[in-house]
Image 1: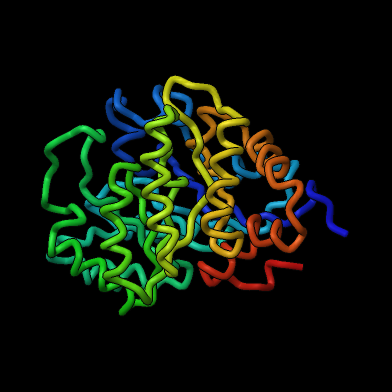
Image 2: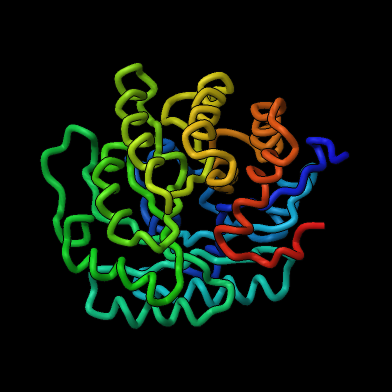
Length: 308
């Protein structure tokens, strides 16, 4: 029987970047003081397959999914081309989440071009959002209320692509309308819906959004990025969040992910996945396989030969 330490892992969300060759504004320009994890100087350096291999050395990672990393938006397909070349020369990644704006005049052209790559399985396009829960203003253009954005979103079904949804918790309930616009498209909620406010009131607000989204059959969730600005990674708090999400979505709609190297700001890969394994240690082997690999393989249509 497979023990927890050797369970096969598909890391469903991570990034690579080479700052010597490519341009990522948030990594290359002035530091953003409002970055959601705080000071991110630690990750403003190259992170390539050789670095990832060192981080995962004590875990049985059999496959990964690379998520767009805010590469220069003037060259949206450039990152995909670069990652594809990396994949040809390395074990990872095995799939790509590309980027395309939904509300631009050339949106369909970019989406079609992204879909032409065999490794591209999904699109992540961050809508315009409020800066904080109590903000009263945000830009309509590019938001989930923008008709052009919504029309672009609907193109994903045409090109057989998933949608990776990344919004803060105060936009989760609003996102339900978006989910219902594309019922035949798989929507993967990134980073557990960002439960940043760990107060009782904040968690209840997050929980309401999660409960509503989980009732939609085309939604899935990445159990990832539990870091909170100004706080250490908390096993007890994050364990409670993970177990609650698994209860809401079931293992068939949940997948663990590292969000490396971003999560490295708060925790090592070694400790992160050891924590994941400990949190679900009482689950059945079939449930663990779902959480650590099989859900990601199914949702992102990866080659099932990755599994032994």
